Length: 540
Image (cartoon, rainbow, N blue to C red; front, side):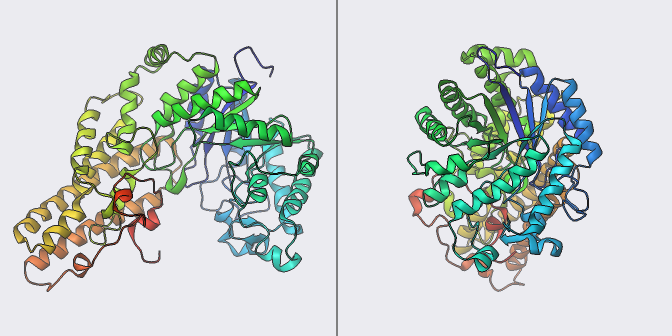
C-alpha cells in the first residue's frame, strides 16, 4: 500500500473483542463495508484470548472466541473489500481472562501478566502465532505488550531477583519477535512500557530519559505504536511523536473513538481529540494510523454509535477539515442528519460537560438506592436533565438501519429520569420523617422498575445486532440485579411504612464523598467506569 497524497499508508480501526462483547462475524463484515466505503483500508480485531488456539482448549473458553473458520471467513471478506485484517493479540499482559484457569497458573508472573523466561509462556505464544499464520493473510501482527505495570514483580521476582525490568522486557520482546521473524511477520507493539519503566510509571512523558540502547535492541521487525486518546492539544501529540522517533523511526499512532465509558458514545470529544492527533501525525510523517474502539467494563456502548467521529476522521485524513461540508456528506451517506446522530452523546453528558469525558449515565444507573455511594455527586436536577435528553431523542429516527441505537439511549434516559436522584430523595424523606413523601416515592420505584424493563429490551436488541450472545450474561446479572434491588428497596420502604420494619438502617447511616476530594469536586460530573465499585462497597 503506497501512501497517497493527503492520506496515510494505513488508516484503520481497532475493535475491542475482549471485554465480553465479541462482535459477531456478520457485524464485523458490516463494519468492513462501512469503513471501506469511507476510505479506511485496515481493521484490527483486538483479541486477548477470544480466538481459537490449537492445543489450548481453555484459551477463550466460554468467552465467545472466534473459531479459526470464522477468522478465515472474515479475513477473506476483508480482502475482497480491499481491507487488510490485522490480528491484534497480547503476548505479555492483559490476559486476566485466562488467569482464572488452573491450566494457566504456571504461565503467570502476577495478575494478568505472563511469566517471562518460562518456556511454557513461549509455547503458548508459539501457538498463538500458529493460529494467526493459519487464519490471516496479513503479514503484520500487533503483539500488544502494554500496561504490564507489575511486570517482573511476581513469580519472576521470586525466581530471578530484582533485575533491570527494561532489559528483561527487551529480552522477552526478542523472543517474541524471533517467532514472528521465522514466519515472515512484521510486528507492532504498544510503546507505553518503555516510557513507564523510564519515568516511574508515567506514559505521556515526552522528556523521559530512555536510553538510546533501548531503541537499538528493539528487533528490526518490530515497530512502536504510540497510543493516546486523551488530549485535544496538538502540541502534546507532536512532542510524543518526536520522542518516539528518537527511540525508533516508523512509529504508528492509535487514537480513540470513545466507546468505552458506559452506555453513551462520546463523539464530540473524539472529534476534537482526533483533529489534534491527525494534525500532529501529518506534521511528523506518520504513515500508519488507527482509531480504537474499546469496551472497558462491559462494552455497553454500540460501536456503530461512533459513526459521526468515524466519518469525521476519514474526511480529516483526506484533508477535509470543513465541518459543515462533513456534516452534509454524513447525512448524504447515512440518511440521518449529523445533529440527530450526535444526540446519542447526550446521556453521557446530560446536556452539559461536552468538552470532557464523563459517564454519569452509567454510575447513576447502578448507584444503589439505599447505600448511595454516588449520591455525593448529585448537584440537583439530574432527573430533569435526563428527561430533557429523552425528549430530545424523541426526534431521533424511529425506523431504519440505525434506529436501534437511539432506542437504547432514549430508554436509558427514561430510566434515569426517575432513577438518577431516587436514592438521594429517599434518604432525605426518610431522615425528615416525611411519610407522605416516602409513600409517593414507592411509585417512583415502580416506574423505574418498569422503565428498566424497557431499557433491558432495547439494550438486548442492540447487543444481539452487534455481538455474539456469550458475554451478555454479565448484562443480565447487572440489569437483572438492579431491577431486583429496586424492588427490594421499594418493598423495604413499604414494610417500613406499614410498621413491619422499625427502621431502614442504610438510610439512617451518614454518607461520605465518594471522590474523596470534597463536595465541590464531587458535584462536578465524574468519569468512573467500574460497575463493581459503583453498586456496593462490599466484596463481589
